[in-house]
Amino acid sequence: MGKFARSWQMVKASADVLRSDKELLVFPLVSAVATLIVGVSFFLPMWGSGAFAHAQQHQPLPAPYYIWMCLFYVAQYTVIFFCNTALVGAALIRLDGGTPTLADGFAIARRKIVPILGYALIAATVGMILRALEQRAGLFGKFVIGLIGAAWTVATAMVVPVLVEEDVGPLDAIRESVELLRRNWGENLIGNGGIGIVFGIITAVVLLGGFGLSIALVNAHVTTLAIALGIATVIALLVVGLVQSALTGIYSAALYRYASTGEVPDGYDQNAFQEAFRVKE
Image 1: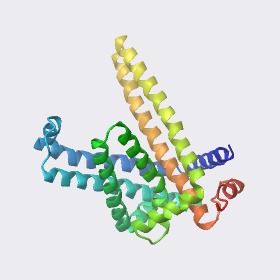
Image 2: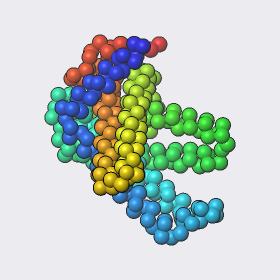
Image 3: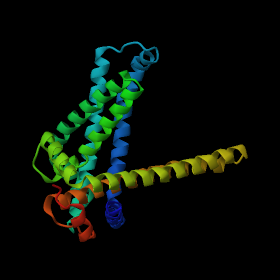
Image 4: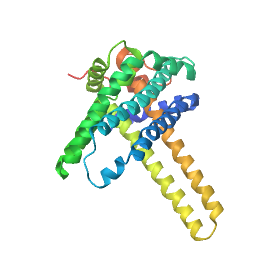
């Protein structure tokens, strides 16, 4: 229970940081728009070439399609990690008492573009391997592969803050992330897991309430109001997703700052951090 209390203290402090610097929401917004553009630019050519028809008929795809999909994965991960690096970089400036701008965050990401590309290539390779294994596995195999994927996600949770602050390559960043996880696994899992659960519940409530009421209005022949409510629901879901992404980045930045330097970020409780990061034998 102590870990839960400490983790939620940190999450709430991260929310205060986001409230004081709402510009941090722009980074996940740019990430969402950019990944959408990348997805469309890759999948439209595949659709035009008839690749999806091959897949629906369970026919093997030619080798160039797999190369194309590999490039898609790398491009998507690069965009996501670039924007996450910008977010975490700006958050670390804020946690150190500075006043970061959007330009500051993106400048940090541009300086780290080489390790970002390397990490994107590693993450894309791992993702494609796990996906290929999952497609060929049975029910139990899918469960095991899902656990492996979750373990990879947790183990690499601190990679972006490491890349931002340290002059290391992607492999060293992964090793450092694993070491940091060994020291703060409780707060990392509980905090990020708690953020996911809370925002998952909020998303479900908005989704069911908004679209459920829209359907009811359509059945009542109040079409204009139903459309307006549907649009408002989509916007609300987007805002919820942006807040979750920004909060997760700020939280990981705060954990990294204390774990790496021993300094408590501005606005966070010193006792909570000291208890959370007692050296584990």
